[in-house]
Each structure stands twice: as structure tokens, then as C-alpha cells.
Amino acid sequence: MCIKPMLDNYKVILWDFDGVLMNSNAVRDLGFEQVLSNYPKEQINELMLFHRKNGGLSRYVKFRYFFENIRNEKVTEEQINALAQQFSSIMLQLLRDEKLLIENSINFVKNNCDKFEMHIVSGSDGKELNIICNAIGIAKYFKTISGSPTPKKELVKNIVINHQLPASDFCLIGDSINDFEAAQANDIFFYGYNNIDLNTHGRKYIDSFDLN
Image (tube, rainbow, N blue to C red; front, side, top):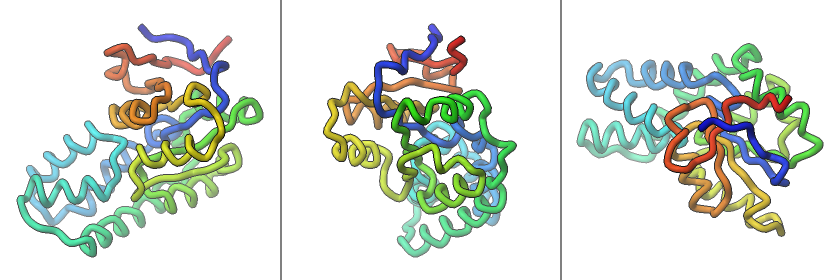
């Protein structure tokens, strides 16, 4: 059952970015399709299925999966990094757009940034994400903005360790099973948002941040 969030129980809120704060998933799809446009369409389609199922994983993991699991060929770190750089150039061009922000969640962030300590933990590239958030004027609401290539489980772990607070003071809000797994691995609470498939298996789900 979808519920109103009971966020007053927490001191620190960790936010996923894509699909939670910004409607950027379609742009991310386009990035993979453009970067890999010289490869067979059916292989790209297979990657897109993996990509959409694993929204919280980094592009580095997804490009490696494309070559090693779909094409069954070796790929070097240099090749992965080159593809990731092409992908980042496309993202920086298309995502510096305030119109892509998700109004419901962003309004909550703006109205409650003095009440909670907030962080962004994303599967997207960390440097790229900081540029985007600064460009669209939301970086000031978050104490840290972090992303890949560090895995999300480690990003969450680092924030929890750096606070002298019990795990029960933290929650993570995300739209993918990888977000749930990152929260679970660090023994903090998880709320699903903007992906009704997460409204299962005992996970709490936010259908709106409007608490009125």
C-alpha cells in the first residue's frame, strides 16, 4: 500500500537522483543508445533491459556488462572510461535543464532543507552530477552530492560512518531495487518513490511528498 512518508523520524535523508529528483531516465536511455550506436540494435536493446532494471548501477558497470555479458568480449578500463566520457558529454549537454526536475520531490527538498540533513547518492557520475546540480540551482540544498564510479552501497556506507548517529536516523529514497539493496546493506530504512514496482515485499513506498 502506498503511504505518506513518515520522514520526521529521521535526521539524515539520502536521495537517489535519476527518477527521484529529476526526470532524467529517458535522457540516460538516449545516452546509451547514442554512445553504442555502432553496435547491433538487438545488443543495445538487451543492454537497455539491464539498464532499466538496474537504475542504481553506474554506467561503468553497464558498459562492462554490455561487452562482457552481451557481446562476450574483453574490454579494457581505458575503453570503458572513453565510453563513459562520451556518455557524460551528452548528459552535460541535455540535463542542465530545470524543467526536468520532479516538482513534487524538489519542493519537499526546498521546503525542508533546514529540517533534515540531505545528501544525494547516485549511480550517475559524481563529477557530472555536481556540475548539473550547480547549474540548475539545487546543489545548495544538499550537504554532499556523490556518485559513481564509487558503488552506491559504499557511498551510503561512507555517509553513515562519517556521522556519529545510529543507523535508525538515516533513510534512503530511491526508485530502483539497487537503491533498496544499498539501504539494506547499510541497515538503514528505504522508501521507494516513482516506481510502483517497489511497492512490494514489505518496502515502504511514497506516492507523494505532499503531507497536507
